[in-house]
Length: 259
Image 1 (cartoon, rainbow, N blue to C red):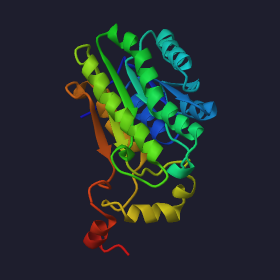
Image 2 (spheres, rainbow, N blue to C red; image 1 turned 180 degrees about the vertical axis):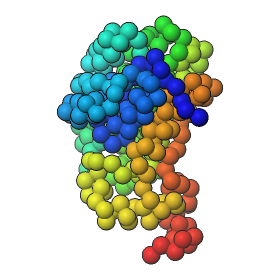
Image 3 (cartoon, helix red, strand yellow; image 1 turned 45 degrees about the horizontal axis):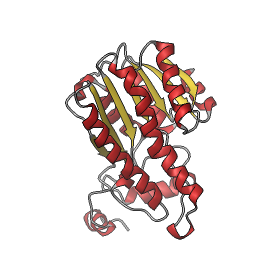
Image 4 (tube, helix red, strand yellow; image 1 turned 135 degrees about the horizontal axis):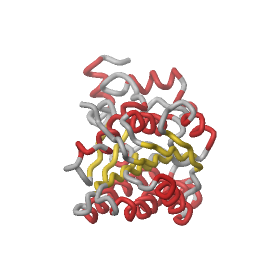
């Protein structure tokens, strides 16, 4: 099945590299006109130079007014907004004992609060056509724990709760609200976690035996952005190679004999 997004206009935040760039590319290949908004504008501009139907925009920060201006600007420039993907995210890692107020606010601002403000700004534009897709890149961290990331997990759990609440409110408007929960994805910007040695170590702990790729997330987003997902709302799709399935790492080792 080929998903057809011809005539649709999409905004993807964090759209310059990694998962975001893959989402931008797959939506554009399906026929959508896509605006890739990125904090490092040069990354979005480089993508726009190579992928047809893509333009670049500066991701303005996480305050309400700036995010509304971004959404309204896209809708004004293209005459409509049909698909919003809030993919920008992340946080500074810190143990709870060392967590600062600034670190907590940073995690909540980009992951949770920006999801809410972007959705709020997009709703009016989508209601004009009785059709819309509000999508968020969440994380399996919303349901499983990792040391140093309790505040990130809390923010992503909040994202999942927001998806459900917003979906209920918008259920009769033609607008659906869904998300994708990635597991470990091989992508730029992971630092030590992105080295070949660390990726091999992490991959050995995943039931499928490897880390995911950005396209694994992008194809799930493409489905959620399509007309074919019309009866699905308030949900998140876990795309993690099965990493949240075993009770402990021992289960993976016992099945496949990893050392």
